Length: 293
Image 1 (cartoon, rainbow, N blue to C red):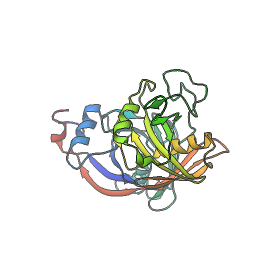
Image 2 (image 1 turned 45 degrees about the vertical axis):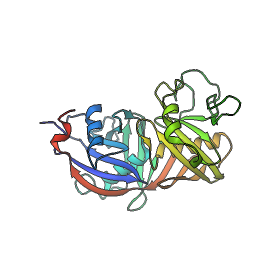
Image 3 (image 1 turned 60 degrees about the vertical axis):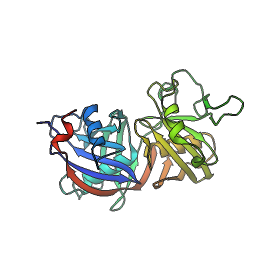
């Protein structure tokens, strides 16, 4: 029988970003790309990100988390998913410890400390943004990644142009526009995600700075498509806006699913993301899901 069969999962969301949390601590299985795709394709189990908990790898951390996109590819970070994992490890009766108010998770993108502010609101320290062209990464050198040469549309009248590039555990390109909802992101997103300038593909953000402390954002997520919210995308949008002197270092970022408060802390350069989570239901993975995988 497949090692994932009958495993308990939590179905959660962060501002509508569909998150599934699966606890494999104390066990050997590692979810394959095919298994992640099988879970995402099952009726009622579609996720934007699958957060899989493993035993800690680094001293002082509480779990190592693998993050899978809908297409089975792995991501280095997921802000909304990290808040969901934090809730699970601090509040879920079977998975968590209700006496805890903070913990540190490790992902491929680095260490993510999380703090519980109230029953369903958490702050995650997303770490320092990576801004050098080869850290994002881009396929060729750009001295200034706050606005690099990339456009869609005619040369003399591009539809989108000159995005800022930021790595927040995964690569992001942020285009500043007047109205993010005016664009056909379903069509533009996959073209830009897979543009040759991004060797690891990229998350694509359309951001409108409405005030120094307010940004409106839509995101096409690498490997997942359009989602109602993207935590790392919100962090990237604020960083990109600050680098262009368009916003303050702390702002509310409004996504289709709701608002996140993002702060690019001046004292240490870390980006803090604060927002809510919601538990929708729990269940168990049916063995039949993995027959083909």
